[in-house]
Image 1 (cartoon, rainbow, N blue to C red):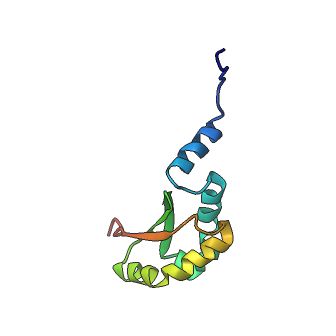
Image 2 (image 1 turned 120 degrees about the vertical axis):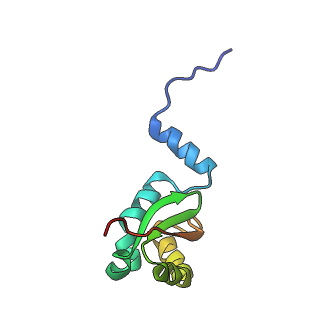
Image 3 (image 1 turned 135 degrees about the horizontal axis):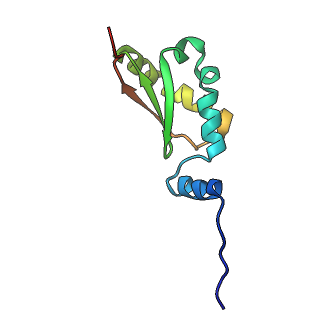
Length: 104
C-alpha cells in the first residue's frame, strides 16, 4: 500500500531544514534578532548588528575592529543572555565580521 503524501507547509519544511543544520527554530531566530538591543544594550547594539544565525552560530557585524574585540571579550556573557531568551544551547558561539562603512 502506498503512503499518501500531500503538500507540506513551507514553514514545516524550513523547520526541518534548520533542525538538520543544527540551527534554532524560526521563532527563536526571529526573537533573537528582534531582541538584540535588549540582549546587548542600546549602546552596543548601535555598534554591533546581529545579522544572521548559521547553525548554532550567531553572526554579528561591526564597522570597527575594536568592537570585534569587545564582542569576543563579552561572548560568554552574551551567550548566557541568549540562553535565557531562547533556551540553552541553541546558540553556542558569536562570530564577528568586520565590515568597514561604505562611503566618505
